[in-house]
Image (tube, rainbow, N blue to C red):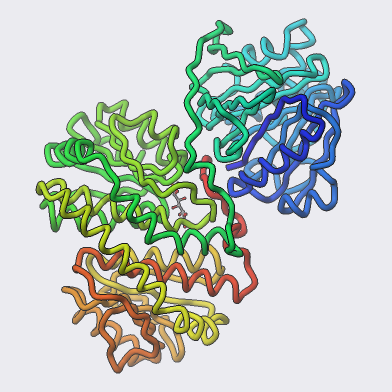
Length: 592
Ligand code: F6R
C-alpha cells in the first residue's frame, strides 16, 4: 500500500517521468498523491487529494521544474485523506522532504519527543516523524545518508522511505525494512520505487534492496550501504520483459483485460518446473501437518486446493486466514509445512504469519506471482503463478492461476504432473468458451438486478469456495452486499433473509455436487429467490442460466470462477464504479 518513486536525472522533464511512474503504481493506493522536486536549490512540493489524474489537473504535478524528485501515491493509514496528510512531508524548515510506505509503530512516542524539543508538525501521519528526525541528525553535521542510517534503527515497524534535502540537491537517499524498495539504473538516470513495474522500459539494471540496506542515488549511479554504513557491492538483475507489459491495450479497464487474458495466462501457469513440483509435493506428503495461509481471494483458491489435496493426494490440510495465523502459532512446529499463497508476495498478514512459522522451525513454501517479493525471500521453496502483472485491484487471473497451481500440485502427489499440465492447457480452451457464451446473459442479469442490495452465492464441495470468491468480487467492485456459503448451510440461518426477488447465484455443475445443490436452490426458490445458475446443465427451475462447458469435476472451479468475475465487472460498470480502483482498497495490503 502506497507507491513511492524517486528519480535522479539530467532530464528537464523529470516530474513528468515521476508522474507517469506513479500512475503505474496507482494500484497501490489512490486517495491522494504528491511530488517534491529539487529546483534551483529549493524544494518545491505539490500535493492534493483524489486520484492521480485529478490531482494533476489541479496542481500540474507533471509540469514541475527540476531534475531530481520524489513522488507518492497514498492509501491512508495514519491520518485521514486530507491535503496536510498527503506525502511528501517535510521537516520544520522545509529543506528536507520524505515519502514513505509502511507504518512507523512507535511514531507517537517519537512525535511527542520531537514536539517537546520544539519541532512543529503539519500532519497527523506517522511518516512525518522521519523528516524531523533527519533534520535533527543533519543539524548535528551529518550528511543526508548518515542521517538516514542513524535514524533507521529508531523507527519501529515497516518502512520503505526516500528522502531529499536542499543541502545535497543532486541526491536521493532511501532505505527499507519490511516494505519493498527496488533501485533501477538507466542511461544517466537512477530510480528507486516500491515496484519494478513502475520502472518498466526505463532501466537496464535492477537492484532489489535487502532489509536494512541503504541506497544513495545520483543521476549516474547508485551506491549501496548496509545498516551500519559500510558500502556493499550489489549485483544487478536484468529487468524481466514480461513485467514491462502494463498498459490496458484496447480495454477500458485493467480488470476486463485481465479477465480476458485468462485462457493465455492459464497456459503460462502450466509452464512449471516438474522438479520443483515433485519436491514440494513430497514436502506436503511427508509433513506432519500442512497449513495453507492466505488472505482474500488467495485464501479462496487455497480452499479449493484443500479439496484437491484431499481428493487427489489423500492429504488433509488446514487453511488458516493469514490475519488469524498468529493465534494458531502454538501448534506450529518443525513438522509443519506452511504453504503461503499470495499474488503480491507482500501481504503483511501473510508475511508475519510466515515469519512466526519460521521461528517455530516450520518449512515454508510459497505460491507467488510477483518476482523478488518479500514472501519469496522468506520461503524455502517458491512456485510462481506466471500470470504477469495484475493491475486491477480485484484478483482475477492470479486467482485462476492459483487454482491451476493447486491442481498441478495435487496431481504431482500421485506422480501425474504431466497429465495435469495437459489438462490445464485443455481447460484454458474451455475458459475461452465460457467467456464467449455468456456475454448476453450476464448483460441481462446486470440489467435486471443491478439495483438489488443483497446477493447470495451457494455451492458445495470443491465449488463452495468459488461461491465465496464470486461474492467477494461483487462486493469489492460493485459495492453490493453479497455472501457466499456452502449450499447446505443456507437452511441453518441465512434462508430467513431470502424473500421475493432475492438473487441467489447457484454454482451447480453436473458433478458430484449437482443433486444436493439443486435441492438447496429449489428450497431458496420456494421462498421467492431468483435463481441464477452457473452450470453445464440447464434446468427448468433456473431464472437465468450462465452456461459452463462440460469439464472434469476437479476443473469446474476454474471455468465457474470466470463468469462470476464478468458479472461483478458488469455490475460495477452499470453502477458507475471504476472496477480497477474500488473505494477504500488497494492492491498490495502491507498493513495489519
Ligand atoms: C480480492 C483481492 C484480495 C486479495 C488479498 C490477498 O479480489 O484481490 O482479497 O486476494 O488482498 O492479496 P495477495 O494475494 O497479494 O496476498
